[in-house]
Structures are given as structure tokens and as C-alpha cells.
Length: 330
Ligand code: UT7
Image 1: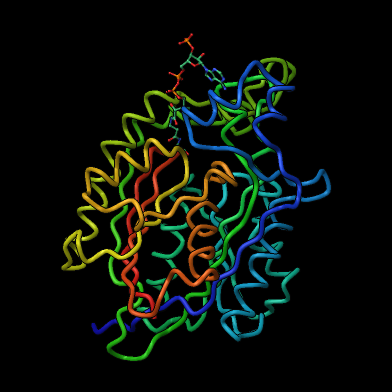
Image 2: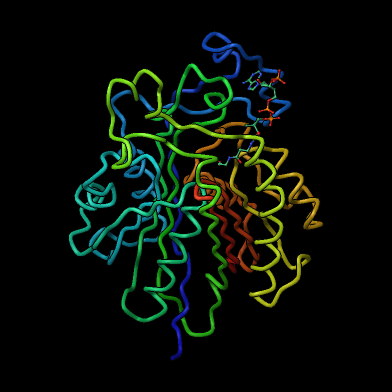
């Protein structure tokens, strides 16, 4: 079966206006700007307002991506929303978005793959386009992580921020490479290292859950750090090889923005120079599924990303999940 090419035809992102600096966090928990910067590289992050839910952030990013692609909401066949912080357990945030954005012809579903979600979303979109089933798909990765943050836990609350990033994936002309290669991996045995322990069917919310804050994000940072530093270069290499490329062919690496030390260690192992590696976690912190989408939009809008460039996206996060994508930028 011959597959149709799939290309990214529009990008958009949105972060809330409110800035929470490391200095601000010193007022909330026992931490310092010096610790946060030296251990993570994060200087500040954006915080959604009480009135804003994940779909509000997704709506802004999604509209910007549609405008950039030059298509209307009615042109969409599908909306995929990678998120770990949906507006509700159900209905899907993608369905809420589908109504609010006015995509009357689109189906929609949420995709739960932690911080790797944007890569998963692009891959799923690529498959629907490749088979000829669909023409235009909006992938909107959006998170209000501050809604599941335990503001008494200094080991996690300094890390996360809110935001959304979106890509329109469309059918490309024959011979165009576009979304060229993907590798996805799951390691469920490490799922307990990053989770929200309660609030699902295993352990519904009760008074004890609220007291222990088990309805908030829990993380074993040091263990995840080790998995990430080993796993990212491995999945990156596999993705590069699958596309028939070598590391020196990569113009831009957009990694999940969790920790500058992880990004730098992975780039060193891949032997990719620092100036080819995109970093924006100093301003936004870790925005989970949204982080790669926001970073990609940033290098597109500021002109760093040029037609013909080869991008490597690498995600890692809850699951434990890993994912790589090679994108030939048109
Ligand atoms: O996005 C999804 C995937 N997530 C990740 O990839 C996260 C990966 N992990 C990490 O990025 C790092 O492990 C962290 C940034 C979370 C933590 O950095 P670390 O260098 O691994 O620190 P640690 O957890 O080993 O803690 C070192 C010390 C501890 O004190 P003691 O026991 O040595 O006295 C912590 O209590 O730092 C202390 N600490 C803090 N001190 C000041 C932990 N958090 C803070 C804090 N401020 N915010």
C-alpha cells in the first residue's frame, strides 16, 4: 500500500500571562532560586488563572495553528488532544475544543501519554493522513499542570508550568517527506515513578486522598532522571536511523523540556552541538505534553527554523514513555 505524505502546515502556541518566578516560589516553599536554576535550568514558569482550564489554553493555541495553516475549523477531520490535565475525566477535552473552535466536521479524542504526548499525537495524525482517510488533523497538546501541583512539595512544585502548543497535520504532495519517521516505546514497569495516585477507578478521591494530596502529581525525580538520560539518546538514535539519517543530518533537536541537565547530557551523547538544541524551559518550566509543541512553535516564529531543515523531536515522561520523530520542515 502506498502511503500519502503528511506534513505540518500550521503551528501555534499559547502561554498564560501570569509569570511565577523562582523568587516567588521562595515565598511558598523552602527553596531558592539558586537551587532551582542549578538543578533544573528553570527561572520562571507561566500560571493559568483560576478561570482558565486546559481547553482554554488549547483553544488559543489551536486557533493560532489554524490561522497559520490558512484553513478554517470546518476543514478539520480530527482533533487530537494530548494532555494529562483534561478539563474533566470525561468528556474529552478534544470534544470540548471541537465545539468551541467550531470544527463541525471533526471527530476528537484525548491522548494520554504524559510528556511524550505530542510525538504520539503527531504519529497518530500521520497514520490517518497516510492511509488517505483524512486530510487535516489538529494536534493540540495542552496542560494546566498547576491544577495537579502539590504546592507543599518543593521537589515537584518548582518544576511545572501551564501552556499549549498546536500543529495542523495535513496531506502533502507526492514525494514530500514531512513527518518522516517515528519510534514510540513504553515501559509500564516504571509507571509508579510519575503518577497521580488517586482520583481514578483504583482509588477514587476520599478525605484521606485529599489529606495526603494523592490527587496531585507525585514523582521520583532522581530515578526518572536516570531513565531519561539513558533512554533519550537511545530512542533518538533509533529514530534517526529509521529515517535513514545520521546524527550530523539533524538541524534542530526539540526535546521535552524537563531539565536542562537532561537535555545537555542527551545532546552530548548524541554529539549534537548545543546551538542546534532548543531550550525554553528557563521561561516556561516543564509543561508536559505541551513543551515540545511550544518549543517548536517558538523556533518557527522567530525564524530559526528554515525550509529544508531536519528536526528531531524527542519526548519522555509518564508511562514511562519515550518517543522520537523526524520532521523534514517544508
Ligand atoms: O517531565 C516528566 C519527566 N520528569 C523528569 O524527567 C524529571 C527528572 N528528574 C529531575 O529533573 C531531577 O531529579 C529533579 C530536578 C526533580 C531533582 O533534582 P536532583 O538533583 O535529582 O535532586 P534530588 O531529588 O536528588 O534532591 C537533592 C536534594 C535533597 O536534599 P538532601 O536529601 O540531599 O538534603 C532534596 O530534599 O535537594 C533537595 N531538594 C530541594 N532543595 C531546594 C529537592 N527539591 C528542592 C527544592 N529546593 N525545590
